[in-house]
Amino acid sequence: MNSKYIFIFVMSLIIGSAFVVFVNSDSDIEVTTVLEPTTTTTQPTTTTTQPTTTTTQPTTTTTLAPTTTTLAPTTTTQPTTTTTQTTTTTTLAPTTTTLAPTTTTTLGDEESVQIVDDNEETPPVYEGEYSNFSGFEGTNQFKLDELVLALPQVLQDILKDKVIYVNGCHEYAKSLVGRCPYGVWDSSGTNIDGNKGAEWSMSIWVSNRAFDAEQAKDVLTHESSHALSYITRNCNTQDNLSYRLDAWNYFGGEEKFADALVLYFGGSYNHYRESGALSSEERTYLEEYLTACTNT
Image (tube, rainbow, N blue to C red; front, side, top):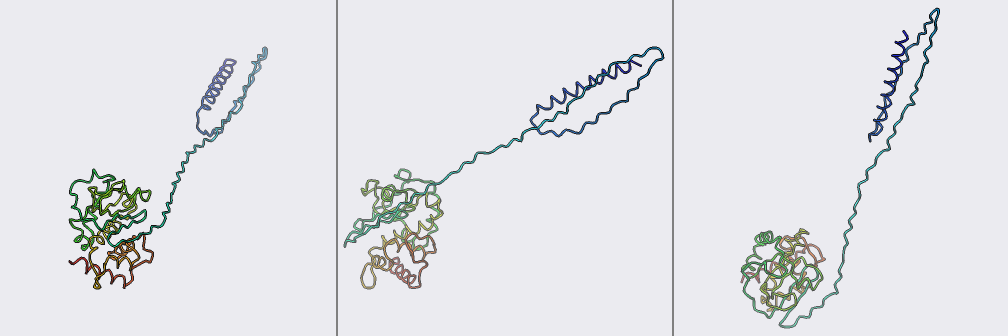
């Protein structure tokens, strides 16, 4: 009988020690653990006294303190990067243009620039590749070619075989306004130093900025209207006055004249015109101008 109690006692020690080792090994794991409640069942102890000899085995009680493992919550914070775009506003002083009887030079502001010398002869169109042009970008050249084919028919007819279309940032115009304009009309082929005679004479430039702003179609129409105005500069009114100068007086200058033509041809982007949609009188004036100057 005593051997039975000793065996139970030894097994209790072994099981208790294993439980302590098991609990301590679990506490190293970096997770949140919820411990189930532990129920300890104590077997009743029976003491048998012999009539002659009483042997009392010492009883050892091992009480295990409950172990609580509290894992600190882990918070992961992603770094936040804030990018602030810097907007630079360039204010250009107003340009006063004096028209001489024979030579006219008109410059726009930062979004459209025209470089014109009315005395020059119309040079032949450059028929090679544009990749060697100073300022050529080319990313949207194919898109520009498609837009040219979609120009209003009257513009296509009057500009055909006279004008080239370049996707690029005209460097001389950029030097004038401090950044790449949306579009440029360059009748004389102007180098970055201002000298004339570059191989891109009679050229319309539409930059990547215009494509990025999704205004390339109207910018092309605007610059094509400058080319139309230039090519028809010898067209006269019924009073034998320059129709081009008359249009400048009517609309308030070459740039506003070109903006009016953008609206006439169905566009919407205007950089210079501030009077909104065309009036019926303005539309009639443009119809008469195009009839008189493009049907010769």
